[in-house]
Length: 252
Image (tube, rainbow, N blue to C red; front, side):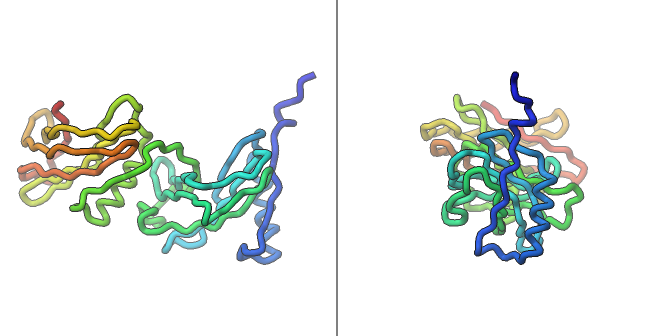
């Protein structure tokens, strides 16, 4: 007789460490929250939001679950904070922050996000937050030196919101078009998931308004390291109207 699926599911036990900033009464709240979570199959990892501690700086408590039968190290494991389909924040765990997770255990983790790791104002969100693991494959993000702090934040949000492209070639991912008084600024990600550095000839782009090409420009030759992506900025000589609906086209 085959065991039922339910009999194979596990609710890993909750563990606390001496350095956790909680009192005895808090333990009951954690245990109640754990009982509301779905059980896991053998050999799985899961992460759940327990509580947002504060929004500035952004801090939260997560419940990390491990049903592996051995210790698990969190080095370079990436966690995303989502609000619906919107990427809110991203954090990469290191051994220094959380050295090891016990086997068959649920462990509370206190997470704080720096300005570079948070992309939107938490107080403006209408959809509840959730935590998910990311399977990112691009290991490095290089910024154009002309990008402002807010532009760099937008680049990170777009880059981390889109899966890595196939490994058989490079690709372009538009980030934004900014209307200036007499120009239009474009920011694009050049993505290289391959194991080798690539050198690209100058890149030609068109600015499209409706079905009409209103301006063209060229970006200089660019080198992108292996398994990385590079944010570039270029400018179109075009005075855009507020009502203009603009788009970007790459000319191979």
